[in-house]
Length: 194
Image 1 (cartoon, rainbow, N blue to C red):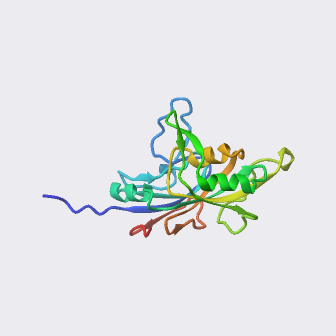
Image 2: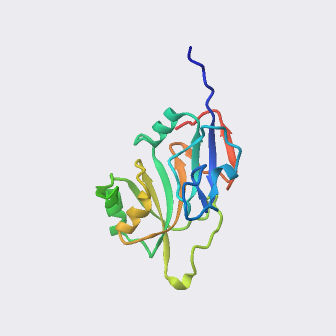
């Protein structure tokens, strides 16, 4: 007899400095901040597409593997605001839009075409005003990147491939779900509308 399981779904504004996991598998540094420190998630909760420790923003979590698989698929857009080292130019934006070659699993991989745009000012985002570095170390600029893939550290590798390393990375949208003003807070929802 199959039991009807009630799955649970969560929206989190992941702060800078947290791993997108519940168990620290690292042997070198055992004092990492984990998602379980932010909320008492039920057993079996998984992050849908991770954000690395130095990235921040929208993170979805669920107890339903099918939901996780769908959201991680290419059918769902993921949108990021990316602060890069230097003033990103039109040539770099065009390269990003067409797809760039990055390393993945020891192989060369060409990313799929994506949407990339210059962003003049990022003051309307629900993010902390975190200083990345002093202005004396050179210019910085922002871009908006919308991808459907999700390879390991893909956005960081993409901006580096066009000569503009990522300084700050914030995921602001997954499908139709937008980042909310709730840094470090968790919101439980009935389902994800993507």
